[in-house]
Length: 125
Figure 1 (cartoon, rainbow, N blue to C red):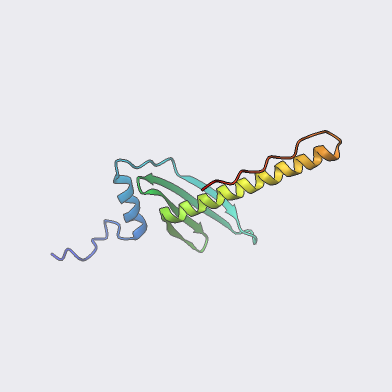
Figure 2: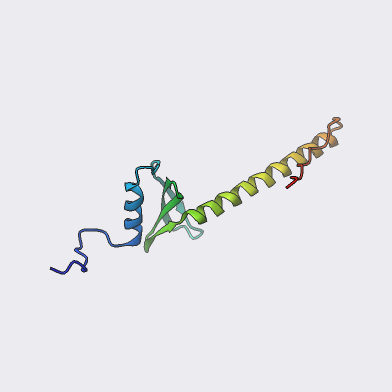
């Protein structure tokens, strides 16, 4: 019997193999997956299934995108998830800073005496 030929019973795609490998990790943390139904600009329905697994190596995101024309399965590796998280943190910081400035300007225009928002200190490093 040739053991190199897939049996057709066990998964052979990268998505299923990696998902199975991470699920077997005893340190893995996996919350319930999330299903998001959206509509494209042209009104076509699509569905996204998002599953995140955290291990000691980082967070890996498994995405399934389903449309009327088919779909796809994607693995977002820990390094990419970390980059996305960093960008989200920068966006949040900038949005808070802008909101603080707008609030200061609004209060100042209304005649309320307020101190300007504190500027972040530069690190000594």
